[in-house]
Image 1 (cartoon, helix red, strand yellow):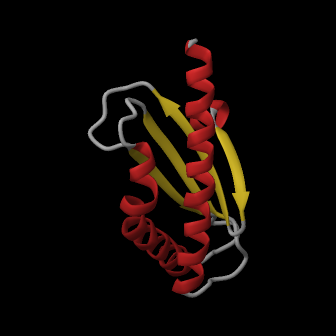
Image 2 (tube, rainbow, N blue to C red; image 1 turned 90 degrees about the vertical axis):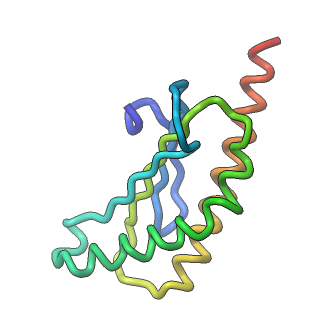
Length: 120
């Protein structure tokens, strides 16, 4: 459902897909982090990338993402796919995830505006 009906954007080295669903939820976002086995054959490399991505997401979600979702009754389904060709250092992940959050918040604002226009 997320990949078929959702929206997506690319901010190298991440491809982000997202979809709003109207369902009961405890947290405003459900996230999936994916690294391709085709690009990184060794599980150690895939796990390192996923660990770095998860840690950056964990540290930045409250200040950058959750604040824009306050008051929304919808659940945001989020998929973050790493499509890079090499393993980057942690500071690179921080910078890029910050860009992902900014772009996602802008998309959230656009979605809220469309809903408000549709209600009138």
